[in-house]
Structure formats: C-alpha cells, structure tokens
Amino acid sequence: MRRWTGYLIAVAVVVGATGLAVLLVSLAPEPETREPTSRIPYADTALVVASDRPIPVRGAGTVRPSAEVDIASQVSGRVVWVDPGFVSGRAVESGQPLFRLEEADYEHRVREAEAAVAARQVAVLEAWEEATIARHAYQLFKQKRPDDAAGEANPLTLRLPQLKAAKAALEREKALLAQAKLALSRTRVAAPFDGIVRHETVAVGQLLAAGQSVGSVFSSDAAEVVVSLSDADATLIPRLWETGPGAAQVGARVVAEYADVVYAWQGHVAGTDASLDAQTRTIDVIVRVPTPFGLPQANSDPGRLTIPPLLVGKFVDVTIDGLAPDRYFKTSRAALQAGNEVWTVRDDGTVGIVPVRVLQRTDDEIYVTGALEDGRRVVVGGIRFATEGMAVRTGKAQGVRG
Image: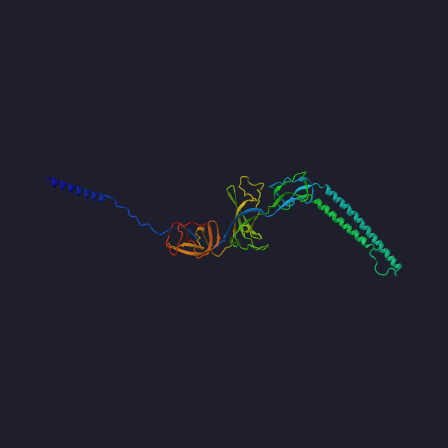
C-alpha cells in the first residue's frame, strides 16, 4: 500500500510540474520579430548643379602698389624746408612740394650764366660788325683791283669763321644758363604722382647728396595683387595673354578681412608676369584694383562704418571670372573618383558610373562636363567601390553653393 502511495505522489508531482510549465509558457509574451538586416550598402550623396555662368578661378596673394618710387633730390644741398604732409601714411598729390634745398649757390650760378650770355651777345655783335666791315672793304678792293680780286674771297678775309665762333660761344653760354636754371629748379622736390608716403627720413638742416633717397611714395590710383595659379587654372581665364588698350577686361573680386569683417573690392586682370615662377612653376597673374586707398571724407558720419583701405602688404583672397562654357556641372569635390569618374545614384537606387572632364577644382567643389543631369545625386562617401547597377541606400543629399 505504501508503495502505491509513493507512485501516486510521484505521478502527481510530474503532472503538476508539467501543467505549471505549460501555464508559464502560455502566459509568456510573444517574442519580437525583427526584419533581417539589409545587405544593401549606405552611401552619402551630394547634388549636381548645372550652370552656364563664368567658372570662378580662386587664388590668393599679397597687395602691392602699382607703382612706387624713391624720393631723392637730383642736386646736393642743405634742406631748408620740409612739407608737414610729407609723413609716412599721408596722401600726397602730383606736383605737391615735399621739401626744398638751400637755393643761394644755385641762384649765384644762374646770375653768372646770365652775365656770360650777355657778354657773348656783345661778342656776337662785335663779330657781326667786323664781318660787315670786312665785306665792304673787300668789295672796294675788288672794284679798284679786279684782276687781283678774281674768284671767291677767302672766308677769313670776310671774318666769317670768327662770326661763327662767336655765335657758337653764345649758344654754349645759353646752354650753361639753362643748366643753371634747371639745377635751381631741382632744389624743390615734388611728388611725381598722386600717392601715399610709405616712409620718409628727411629733416631741416640735413645735408643731402645728389640722388640720396629720403623716402618713398607709391601710387594711390591702383593696387595690384599677384596671384600664383597652376597652368590648368590660368587657362580658364579668358583672353589672359591678350594685351593692349583694346583688350576686354576680365573681372575679378578681391576679398580681405579686417577685425572679423569681410570687405570686397572689384578689380580686373591686368596681365601676367613674363615667365613661370622658378620654384613653384606657377603662372603669376596680376589683378589690378582701382582706387583701393579711399580716405574718409571730412564731413562723413563718424558713427558710420567706412570701408578701410586695401593696405599694401595685406594678404587677400581673389576670385577671377573664368570661362563660361555653354553648360557645365558643379558638385562636391568628394564626388570625384579615381580615373575622373563620378558615381551617380539613379531614381531606382542603383549606381551609374559617369566619366567626366574636370574644368576646375577648389577646396570643396569641382566643376566638370559630362553626361550628368541637374539635381542628380552623386556618391561622396560611405562606400569605397561601386559597380554599374549596384544598389545603394541613401539619405538626404548635401547641397552645393549656387
């Protein structure tokens, strides 16, 4: 009886455990179903933008004056006056006196030369009178003794060489007088053109030798920026090597930053240097900016923000108006693949490999021609290789500057 009781207890335990297990399984939550992970790669994309505007050729350079000269006197002497405006950074006008040398010695030389000219004028009159007397005397002699006066008279008899020598001496003294007056005028030194004083080192009482530089002035009518470009970039500039007054100007924009504020000046391409840079093998393109040193007006509003001058020595960015093909495309530089190809993404999400011709490269953009479409997406990251027709997943495409 005890044996049967044990069997019954064991069976009851097994049945109870089984029922409990069934109950727990039935009460357990349904497991979440997950879609299988896609094996289609994800690609970052950017948009392609079509354009027919001039392709910008970008570069940078340092501002230099279009013309600069040393200020020096052509004669020697002691400085007796200096213009208060002849100071570094000041603007000067063409013909404005800058300084003056002592004139006394040069005035004495002018008076000496004038006296010498007067004396030579008297000598010419005397020689002319003597020649006239000699000619009359010869005519009387010829009438009285025609046989002895046959043929032409000797020039010395008529005193013609003496008259010619007196006239030559007068011309020499006149030249010396003109030279003395020129030296006197050179005691006053003036600005050769409208410009700005770069530096000056002259003071009253200073003794100067002829040709001694006492400062420099650079032209204020224009400034230049020398932009070093590769030959590929330079060939995008239209009419770059055309010279002469009739050549059409190619526009350029010069940008500089002062106190975190960006300012821009309009200019044009003025030409190129005659040779390649020996070290960089680049072409130096000269961009000219007219009236870059504008000074504030005397009655201008002091609270108004004025455009600063384009200072000589300032490092600036330059954008030149390049060629304007009938149609080209621009997009992110990251879209350019090896072999000058771009990977486009079709509407069905498949990749198309398109060969392109690169017209221009910048830090973040490329300008190309090829079988592209405006607004088409191109791969710029996410995948390292692609094949024609390969499927990709994409998100929002990156924009491109207009």
